[in-house]
Length: 530
Image 1 (cartoon, rainbow, N blue to C red):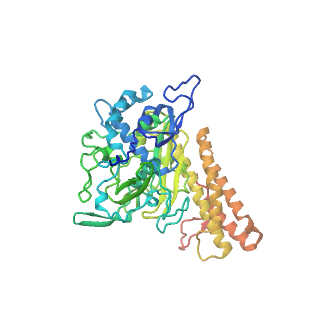
Image 2: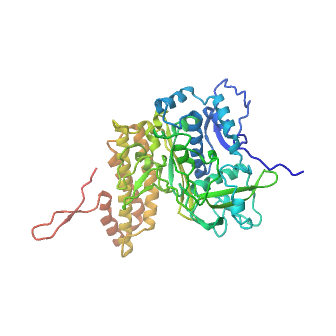
Image 3: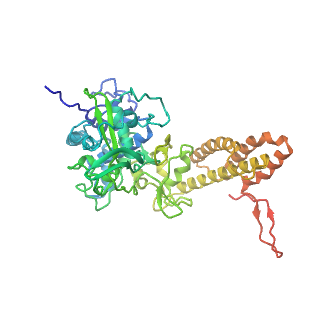
């Protein structure tokens, strides 16, 4: 008799690594006894969310993607996927007051969705398109090295480890599902496996909705708080019957038709993928032995409106999300998370979720998760950083003095960082007789000295609520970095002259005086602007 197809249901199987909150004295756990599981399935994750400190996924884009799926599940389970009845914020607070998700509600909800969360279901595998088995060439699959985004494949360079494409290490389903999520949200544009649908045959795809971006998530003392704080408030016209996640749709996607409309937060969080995937398990279901990866739709799905991104405006007037930058510390984004109109020529807009997140708790931190990468094949580095509790300072309609001071601190820190950068480049150009000011080793050294010190100064002054002497403090940090980096050049006449002349850039540079009657102007030393 033929063996039954393998199954791996994400509701039941342990696949999400978690870190548990410390147990209090006498805090017995009748469910787990003395040993708490390292990984849990979706049912246990929701049931024990109040006892879980956080999700312990080390792959930043996978956690960012999983958060969006969990927000959609939480909204649907609690009924917070619609604005009414009543006031949405008050209904969310009613759930917060319970201090946990109701066990009966969790059991009923997970049983209802269970059928659509089997990773290897032959008819409706979770977040996969079973049509690929007939629409793609079975002899030209992507392979598991392509599926696992931290492995090299094809001609790409090795990142974390080397791989042997002739004898690949097969991932477990728990590993594969995390990279399935990364592909849906951060997948590259460009060449992919050929897919034929009717008369349409194509082998290229559009980039995923979060590719190269940095997303910001509120995190509380427990996963329970984090999930509720991360819920976006739905519009008054959103109806759960039309705002569907991919696993809730009755029909398989039509890749040559227009993508389904994004009608609310649940579809907006989960239905923006430009890639279609199909995992191929081995006979036991204990490993994934292959994968199809190709395009999902020919039309591009808009990514505007994601509530966890800082949206900026280009010089051409187009909105774009703030990109992930592994060399940029998170403190430089804090004012854009708190203020309604933070400073900056790009006119940044804070993520929409932070308008209401602090209603859950004023002790929320911000977790920044992203992937520094280009639009196609180049991946640089994961970005994962967390602030201290800052969302209690968020600026509301009446304004918030602390949030405004935070914005001022950030501007000052960046001002002196920019001045230091120009000063050392100008000094280097004068010392080496370079034809123009450009990147140099002094600039790299100065940045490595200044920015960590500026970050420490930022958080110290915020913690002490000491904002008055901030300009002088950041100026001193820039002066120290400049003096240290340029010290070796002072032993020569040319070096001393170049270093002394360029130092004025730390204070804003020379200032042009108004032209005299004869038509000439004079340049004088800058006065410090604070």
